[in-house]
Image (cartoon, rainbow, N blue to C red; front, side, top):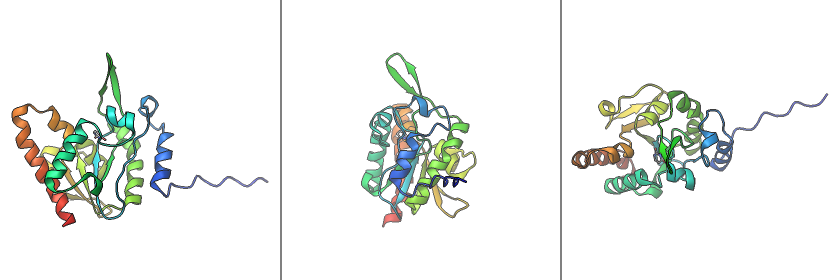
Amino acid sequence: ARPTPAPAAPETTLEGLRDAVQRCRECPIGALATQGVPGEGPQRGGVMLVGEQPGDQEDLRGRPFVGPAGQLLMRALAQAGLSREQVFLTNAVRHFKYEVRGKRRIHKTPSQAEAAACAHWLEREIALVQPRAIVALGATAARSLLQRPVAVMSERGGWHARADGLRVLVTLHPSALLRMPADEQEAALTTFTGDLGLAAALYF
Ligand code: URA
């Protein structure tokens, strides 16, 4: 009798995970995206920042937080005393969900079912990266990480424990700041930077 093939080995490196994500069709988003966008940054003991999903620029370039929301995040991180190189940047959902309007691809929020289908990629990344703590940027990330609905505005600015002991700091998503009217943006940015400062404090 022929031996039964060994089950596919679980990915043991971030490179393996990145390649496997490209083939993922567990929800409908992947088929329309340019590529899956994996996390990037240092492993072991740093802070991991988790967004919602790649945006237009991230989808084209294959890297997280390289578009307008990413630029705002980098400014706030710098004010909090951290650089892009010090943190691991990733997302709750690996592919860009959008609708076409004219020549533009407009971001669409992933459904709860799509985010849930994607959560195992994030969990596998967490297992490989072994962050010291995690920052959830916005409701999609917070829900994927804490496995419950999270009201960002009332739960932001504090640490929440996961069943595995990892701590998750909930804060706003930088895109939410970009969408605010100009007169609200400054105060919200100060709050956001203060939240990131709680994560930065873990480095000092
Ligand atoms: N918004 C996100 O949530 N993630 C990115 O990578 C870029 C924008």
